[in-house]
Every structure is written in structure tokens, then in C-alpha cells.
Image 1 (spheres, rainbow, N blue to C red):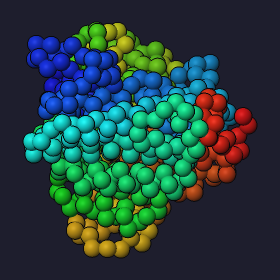
Image 2: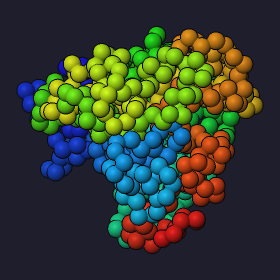
Image 3: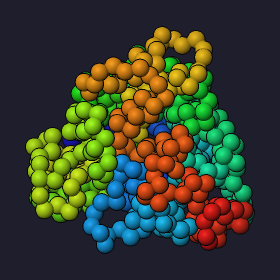
Image 4: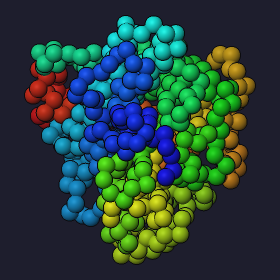
Length: 493
């Protein structure tokens, strides 16, 4: 089994306290129906554990997620077969409407995370009222900080997808939720930053248990949020703080950043964990993100998935033309060739390429018949991106006293140097290009194109329409249940 921690903190939800009952895991993201004893220190982390678990649920972190977060970009194709995944095809060619089920599922998924985080935050207030020990109260403050990072992450994705969205920061009645207007985009970002600022104040530099979001996780996320806000000074300052801490570094080999062995490594700032717990069946804290992208119709069955969200020919050409050999070899699995781990992708698989960043070796794929990728942690924020955020912010004019003393050129070329590419000058275009190469297939490309104003040009051939497709429509289902919402301009309801 690769890690014990996954079952006791961020990934499995609440476990009974007996070690003998270690594998007696409750339903994902659930809390005990018998109520919480707020006088017990050992219960403090339980609501936060459930919030972490909500981030991995298959309703939002599998087919729906890859369809909405990855497929719209020029680097990702729908994949699978021509007739499979009709709603995903609609997203791939920008013909989707507000009734698209994948889009609705992502709205629900991220608000489920918000709800779980809100429950955890409210629970911390109850623990504070019931406990007086200084150490316990410190733990409560830290757990509240973790929950606020999780909530900020959910809202960051909501605002990137839909623009301004409703603010749900507490338990609300059905009447309140049924008539709740959206915040503006600016207000949504302000709310996200408030959560992250409050988290940064109380979170420790590190937790004993791997996988928990610490102060630097919050700083890295805020740096990324600031990038979208074009708050260059804040983006640079937060990224600089992570760099100057000297607690993070690039993994020696590019593939290490995505391997099972490299999970929670020195490059990782935020991950969603997945583990079959060494079982071959039953209940386990599994994330299906990797499985959904596994080679379709491959053999043996442990080396196959649904084959969605595959690398485009354009991405392959991009890597080839820039001589990006190492990234190409890791990012793109080619039909008819072996994976980096020595497993064959059959020539008969329907797609020419598959996402190599979620590849797991056949020796680890032991959970039931279709187990590809189930032991693969989903990387949300890596140190490589922090370096690129820092470089971009400096190039865009960020000023301040930066502790790391690193230049934009140095930050950019540290990322390039890891994959054997020569040094170049840091410019807006060179950094954007490096983000495309470094973060390919990690579900940021579409949003990068939108925030940098390139989407209308780059995605025109896919069907992208300016002043419309920069955001997805608020789903019809949500408009029906919340009369306070306004229909997204440009879409037919």
C-alpha cells in the first residue's frame, strides 16, 4: 500500500477510532448520523476530512470534470469513440446549451465542496465553544484554515467556469437558497481572497500528515487567483513567499511529478488523493479522474479506461516543433507503443494518443477488473506552476521586495532546464508558451486562453464564439431552482 495517511486525513472520510476497524470507511464525504461530540479533540479533524473527501467524488471528479475542464481547449480532444459521449462532444465543439448535463454536474460538484467546507467551518466554532485547551484550539484554527482553502478552491473553479456566482458561506434555508442572486465576478474573487488570507494567517508551514493543505498551499492558490485578477503584485508576492520558503522544489525528472512514487513530493502544493488501499474490491477512497482518461479498449483490462480527454494532434505538433522531447514522452501515450512503465498501448485502441500524466503501471492496477489510474493522485498545484506565475507577474510589471531574489528569467528557465530545454528570455509570450508545455493535459489550458485573451483566435476552429464562450452558461436546472439567478448572456434557455 503506497500510503497510510490517505485513510486517516484528506482522502477517506470519517473512520472509526479503533485501529482494528481501520478499513471500516464511511460513505465518501459523509458525517456520522448520530451527531458530533464537540468536546472530543479526536473529532476536530473529522468535518475537514469529509470536506477533503468531497473533492474527489466521482460525480464531479471523473467524466463530468474532464469533459468541462479539459476538453474545450485546443490541446485536448474528446477522445473515446465517435458515437460515445454526445454531451462531451457538444463541449468539444462549443455547441453546448444550458441543459448540458456535464456543465450542470460541475456546478453541483463545486457547490457540494462549498457545502462540505461550510459544515467544517461551522463545526470549528462549536469545537471552540466546547474546548479550552490551547493545543486543541490551535488545531481548531488550523482545521478552519484548511476548510477555507478548500472552499476558496471550489469558488475559484466556479468563477472561472461561470463568472459571478452566489455566495453560500453558511448553512442556509431552502427559502434563502431558492432566491439567492449571484455575486459579481469581482465580488467572487474578493470572497476567495478573503478566505485565503484568513487561512494563511492560521495554517502551519506544514502538517505531519502528508496531503493536508498548509500555509504554502494557500499562498500558491492565492498567487494563481491573483494571476486571473491581473493583480500582478499580489501574484508575485505570494509566489515569491512559496519560493523563498525553500520548502519546495522541482522533482528531478519530469515524470516524477506525476508518478505514484512522486505523490505528495517536494513539488506538490495541492493534490487530491486516490488509493485502493491495497484491496482488489470493496470500498476505498478512489478518484476516477485517471481511469476516465485511460486507453480505451486496451488489454489487459487493468490497462484500460474510458479513453476521454485525449491529447490533440496540435499538442503533439507543438511539443515536436519546440523539441520538447521529455515532456512529449511523459504527457502523450501513443497507440502501438509502450508507456514509460513498459505497458503496451495496443494499436487497435480507438484514439492515437492518451494522457500520459495519469498513467499508472499495470503492477499497481489491482482493484477489480478496470483499475487503471485508481492509485493516481490528481495534482492540483505544482511548484513548477508557482515559478511560472512568479515569472509572468514580474514580466507584467509586478514590483516589490521579493525575498527569493529570483528574476523572471531564472524562474522560467528553472522550469525549462528540468526538461533539458535551453534558456530563453522571459516574455509574456515565452511564459504563456511554457505554461502550455508544462501544464498540458492538467485542465488549465482553456482557462489560460480565456484569461490571456487568446481564446477567440486559438479556439475559433473548434467553434468558440467571442463574448459568449468565455464562460459556461449557468445551468438551466439551477435557474429553475434559484429564482435569484440571471440567465447567462449569449445562451438560449
